[in-house]
Image: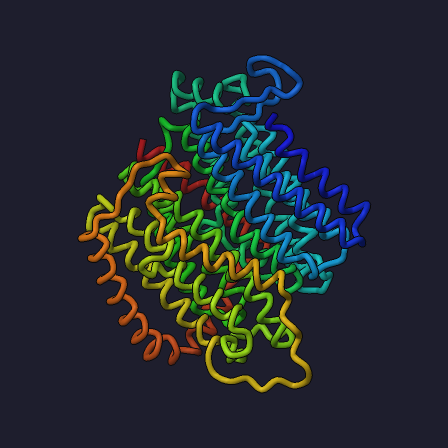
Length: 531
């Protein structure tokens, strides 16, 4: 039953909370995570044949709580199970606090619940509880900065959940149902003008969860806060924000008749460009990675809304997987780097990572190569398909966004080389952390070399890479790399004052709330104009 996918991680959380100090407990939990990954694989194969539906409480029709898994849902559950297994191995020796492990596995159950639920109100409940769990993890170290970031994250999400609650309340008033499939049917047969307001309310909630422009200011606070463990930041950027993309896909299906893809195409492009600019302006390792996540989410949103439903859509889905692996590897490796360098987070002060810890340095390089779309890496394949059968203008936009990504990681890569004078003993690298991070880095390469096969396996889509087309993309990439080096060396590095001004751009709680209202008005206006 699908219920077990939600309940099992929660039972693991309780088990770890009660028996947290014995080493055997962690081995048992890792074994349980492997079993959950196996169950996710089994569910994946089942959903290739037919959707799986569970009515909790044996209520028939739309009266009870329905859990459903189709081929897309099973991919997200598979990704969740895999990344939490990696994080469990990474954190094996890192943290002995039973509260941390309790919250971590509770978070896993809630995310799986979001992917499985077919009830609009349950999305609200699961997301609310997950917000509290994530806020506590952000404030884990209880220092002033982390407390501030955690409170902002909590308050912002409480406010935006009211948009969602009013949206589904209005939906229920019009349709009389909260089940997603029933709501989809009612929307398709009723006057679409009735749904303009609930669509705008719900999509404001979804846009903030995806960190789209102008609703992204909470993300660097949450993902880049100093006090949160790096394993938490890895899950936030690698997986948690993908639940927003998943909900975007689901709600676009429900509101298919009024879904404004043109609007979200433009918003995706702008989000990616602003994310790149803000990432270039940062000097904090975590903040560079956090703003880079915003840029990649904007790129994925662009691909999902391009008017080429086959290759671009598939490439965007595949980029969700590639980004999850690469960004998780980068955050985890950053955690080990910062620990080795005595807590230094300023990228201008960290040098010689590759010399000091070759395995972590190689994992970082592999993840960066995946992020910038280097040939034979996963990002290259996903971006190749995003640009397939797309007009020259949108192709140029994607190339430009990738050019910005190259600039960001040229800046990030400077800490790998050079020399650093250590004072005192250097912490010994943890074997579990090195192995899990290096495995993710190697996956970034494997997802490129076997890209066609993986796409066919995960999404059931038959795609093929044209050698001529891929060679053309290689030439574009090499040109972007050369141009990126010149721009970074002669423009970006020489404009520290300008970047410092950009770095200070930040919206507080009030500004984020105002941006919610602005975005809501923009969606409502766009629906009225475009439809």
